[in-house]
Amino acid sequence: MAVPLSILDLVPISEGSTPRAAIDASVSAARLADKLGYERLWFAEHHNTEGVASNATALLISEAAAATERIRVGSGGVMLPNHSPLMVAEQYGTLASRFGDRIDLGLGRAPGTDPMTARALARSSGEPLEFARNIFDLHGWFGEDGVARSAPILSPVSAGTNVPMWVLGSSVNGASIAGQLGLPFALASHFLSEGIGQIIDEYRRSFATEAPTARLQAPYLMAGINVLVAPTDEEAEFQYTTAMRRVMDNSRGERRRLQPPVTPATLKAEDGADLAYARVRAVGSPETVKAELETFVAATGADELIIATYAFEPSVRERSLQLLADLWF
Image (cartoon, rainbow, N blue to C red; front, side, top):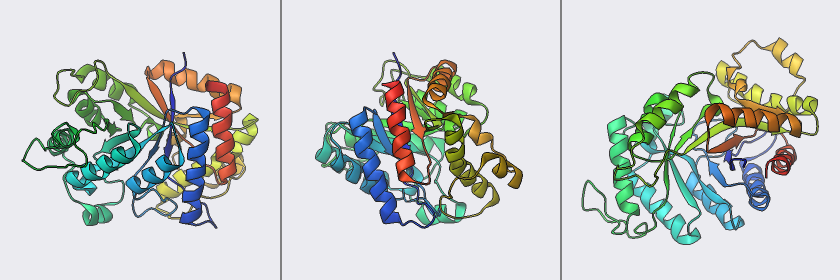
């Protein structure tokens, strides 16, 4: 049986478009994903990044959850050093109170931005022990009594909601934290070029079912992969250059909105930036993508995949989601 498929959304803003249009397109894609059978839709937190409108994840989750009926909606993730853990508990408790058992809370240690902006946002530490302590407190606030583990602080709105928590990571440290806490692990393999196997092995090796925060009897791995499906391999490769151009912009420190696709050969000739990011991908016709996804699942042993799809035109992204659903579900 095919593993579940989920969606990671950064709410990209295309050149010539606006944040409002990007959010509208994201909500439209959420409705489509809900109908097609995708497992969950997560919004990734980023700051001070041109071309990305996924800054306030809780607000985006509320918009998407209100527009859908079945799909789980959550954060991929909340960058915990940027936030007061109590505020996170209250926000996600409110979401769970409003939308029931469809809300996920993915937690990351990275700031999701540059050092200067991170200092402006900082509310807690991303150090492993502090990160784990904050997760223990969140576990208490989402528990039946709604009280933190470290202090007698009550969060009535989150009490009893038991919002599922995930640890997000792209390193052995993140995998170890997820395993020791007995939590599901979302691996950001979609932007890694090496070390994926080692990270996965560490998560499974360190998994502890007896941890107070554990809600699983066995490790559960969701792995990220870049996906773009089009009627032909050639068209898919052409559309995927939008994602590649974004990687090139990041490598040069160039801040601009999502750029239109170009001929792949021209793109490679224009810029020698490292495109290792593009290796963790499934791009092509439905037949090509199905084979590449199956190979990736076999290599990682993933229990679930979360896909990242960048397209200059929202209609291209929605077509990709439709074609992927047709071949996978």
